[in-house]
Amino acid sequence: MKRSVPLILAVAMFMEHMDSTIIATSLPAIAEDLRTSPVSLKLALTTYLVALAIFIPISGFMADRFGAKRVFRMAIGVFVLGSIACALSNSLPAFIAARFVQGMGGAMMTPIARLVLVRATPRSELITAMAWLTVPALIGPVVGPPVGGFITTYFSWHWIFLINVPIGIAGIVISGWVLPHFEAEAGARLDVTGFLLAALAASGVVFGTSVISLPALPPAVGAATVAGGLIAAGLYLRHARNTQRPLLDFRLFANRAFRSAILGASAFRIGAGAIPFLLPLMFQLGFGMTPFQSGLFTFVSAFGAIAMKFIATAALRAAGFRFVLIFAALMASAMFASIALVNPTTPYALIIGVLVANGFFRSLFFTSANALVFAEIGDHEASQATAISAASQQISIAIGVAVGGGILEAATRLSGASLGLDDFGHAFVIVAVLSALSSLFFLTLPNDTGSNVSGHRRRNLEAADQRSRAS
Image (cartoon, rainbow, N blue to C red; front, top):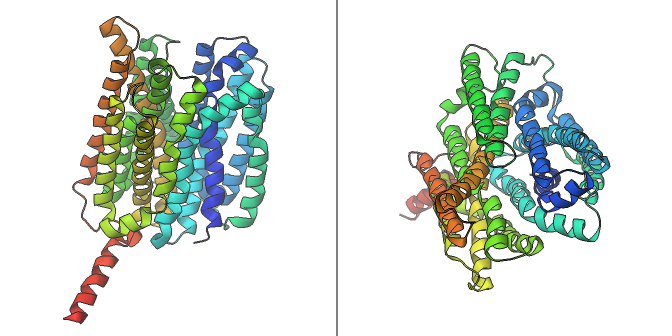
């Protein structure tokens, strides 16, 4: 494996993941400059998530039809153009349109980066490569808030978008040198009906769950949108069964390893996706921290994510996918629940230790689950797998944020008082239980699942061979 391949892909993914969260601490400043309210602006930011939901399902087709490397570089270019447009926006409609363009680029960058990595990496080295690719996805959301607060406080909110320009240009140039070339499939044809139905389904669920977790629109609007998305999803499933080459081929779910990886990771993300939403709120409302201080605290989980990279390969080789995924899911869930026990008098060192452990086990889980997605499928199915995996990620994360917001909203309505530490404690326990349930999807997997990637079976065979020789 060329180490430069996952690194250049990881930089592009880091840019996209950080950008999606860096805006959070800059919302008041942007809203004031655009002469709108922070609540309206936050609702407008969901257009980015909607763009992701619409265009992620088509990413696999685009990679096959025009070549993964070419589309990846074009996606970076679209993302950079959207970033420039965001920085130049002088009204709410202009900002909405610019964020949508950014989302179009981001929808192609993440799944195609994973596809390029899978096709360019031998299966025996996929875990190490996935570790390099997973870390920026985990670090970006925790780096975003403190970086956004710093830039907005000491410079201008426009720079949170303009910093993407030199990074993106460098990514386009370097990826042209580093990434291998993949031949396009000239005969690939777009499943137009499938694209429209998948876009309606994913965007309906993502937008609806986002609306439910925001006070800008009545919850009934969000519920109706989710219902429409689910109806479109049902129509897509019927369409896919009767189509020879559907846009998203759910026949891949017949593969037990792929099915467990997608469903288990989605269940885990519903719980874990609420953590970046709940944690800063608890530090600010319950501990009295400033946004910048809370951002610095959440940032420490990145150190755990980085530390994981050095042991993921050894852990999976020693124990296999089944054990590692169950163990990581339960340990990460225990860390989520332990956050419920902290309060303003808890020593900072203890809080930091919990957050570092949190980042470590979350990263171990996601690295393992992302590798398991591709462990037992062929290269010709990889484009379908990346599109399905990326779409499920966006939907489960959106549901996770909605779950976190819904728990807090229910707590305030039941108590009739403003949010307190106990309310956050209950929320962390609930999302911990949801995340822990993801371990059930891996219980029935054989011990040697994905051994061609993890090396677990090979290790056992080598040990048995050595014992037989010694005897």
